Amino acid sequence: MTEEKRNLMVVEDDPGLQRQYKWNFEAYSATIAGDRTEALAILAEKKPAVVTLDLGLPPDPDGTTEGFATLEEILKLAPHTKVIVASGHGAHESALKAINMGAYDFYEKPVDPDQLGLIVDRAFRLYDLEAENRRLAEAAGATRFQGLITGCDSMYKVCDMVERVAPANVSVMLLGASGTGKELLARAVHNLSDRKDGRFVAINCAAIPENLLESELFGYEKGAFTGAVKQTIGKIEMAQGGTLFLDEIGDLQFPLQVKLLRFLQERVIERIGGRREIPVDVRVVCATHQDLEGDIANGNFREDLFYRLSEIIINIPTLADREGDAILLSKAFLSKFNDDLKKQIMGFSQDALVAIASYNWPGNVRELENRIKRSVIMCNGKKITADDLELNIKEDQVEVLNLKVVRENADIRAINKAMAQASGNVSRAAKILGVSRPTFYGLVKQYDIVL
Image 1 (cartoon, rainbow, N blue to C red):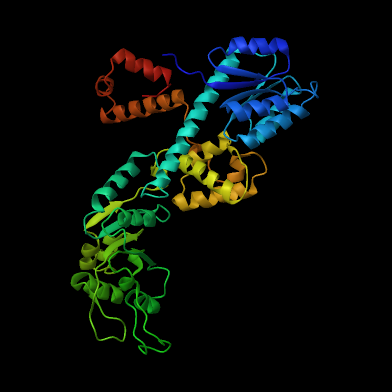
Image 2 (cartoon, rainbow, N blue to C red):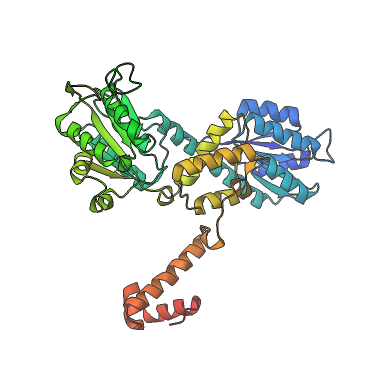
């Protein structure tokens, strides 16, 4: 059984080049279009993943206006299609304009079949990779981890832990910096538990003044204090049969810690101004970015409450520690804000992707989402650039992805560490590295390392 050929559309009006392209792209199911109308008809029927486009099309074969008009319509109708523009008309200016409009790549005529073939092959590979990313993002949205997009092992471990912990009726403490997705994971604990049909009630302990937080948590009876004109049920009661999420639990004041501890021990509450104990069946999930063990040592947080709240502790990595996730999330946010803001931005320029991968993201996913939203609003071109992101990245912070450079840097670090461990003894250092002395000296000479 032969493998089905991929659809490739070639937009070219020159009969000689049409024959050359047809011969050059035998590995694909190549369809030739001679003008804009024909190209759009083929696009609708064949839905090619990759298009090569000559800018000099009739009725303007000696110019570029018709070619750019065709490019704009192709990207409007099929925004994920990879368009490779080829032209001899003002090559430099045309290249800049085409890329800014959203073209994948540009090739100047006369065409070298081998080089163009490599560009087309890379375009198909990128199209497949982006399609897979979109599929994974959609799949993530369809799971009970709704909103979580990751390709990182450390986050997969967190998800695995959540799945194992959720069915058990134990309190869970989520530890992580602000913006890492603690509430999202708390909802996952609820959705994966036997309490999923009950309510998920969240309260931010840092967002409510101390004098109001008690009434928010425990509720109050009519006449309990000035302004209490009716009986009001608190968040704990509202979560009956479900899950209570206490965000930023580290900001809970000491007097309230005592009252919360009694509830966790006895599973009963008393409304403010009330005299009746009310039994409540809720699961408690809490979260904080603070060092609670340090707060315990300083006398700011009760140790017995900490152990009641943290039967299971889940540590959430920062976005900077989630390899590759910043890029995945950026593309998902771009798609979301394109829809929300009625924009048609095609993607990110290479310098933008490098900036996203290199930035430390102190505000984590929340900062990334805000930054992408702002960039979508402010972007004037078809792709978001590093300038649109406005990330302050120093030159020495830029992530290096060139494999040759990465390997060289790793070799240099390993040699220096081995020499340090061997106290300067070359034979021992070579043994630590698992190489011969001549190989070791060759590496030292190659990288100009001073021993």
